[in-house]
Figure 1 (cartoon, rainbow, N blue to C red):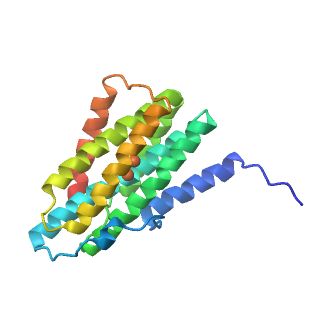
Figure 2: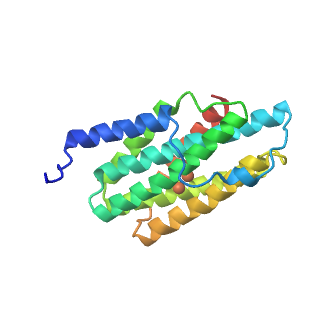
Length: 214
Ligand SMILES: [Fe+2]
Ligand SMILES: [Fe+2]
């Protein structure tokens, strides 16, 4: 039997490029069932539908960014346990990504046209954070997940009352994101010093402004 070939740098680069393309242009499948499946599909009026689609587009971009951030961090993580942790978190984000994409289609809408740029930017930020060391890597996970959790809360408050399907998805995502943050904290996350959390919040505010519209 031939021994398994060791992954070369080129193999890794190719598989990361494939992952990026799948996240941005493909439709990666979810592993878990869509939480919206059990929720009633209530008819929304046009204003409600557009608002719900804007919010779900933001959430979809948030998941594209989370994927890219974690994959970028994993690419430079020193400790294999940290790399595993990051890639496992990225896998659950794929479920979120698929559910948001599905809901956007139901709402007769589409993902953000800027997804390639969001992915590239987040990957670069993830890799830069990762180069500072694994404690920083995990600190970034905690900060990202806490900020996503906070904006999911906001969205749950402003979603149209009747949009039970988007609500079911966001509620499940919120529970997952809180778990991701707790797990990273337990794995030894460092507390990110100012002004990093403020810069991250500003970047996410810009992303939300653009993604709601385009
Ligand atoms: Fe997520
Ligand atoms: Fe998450």
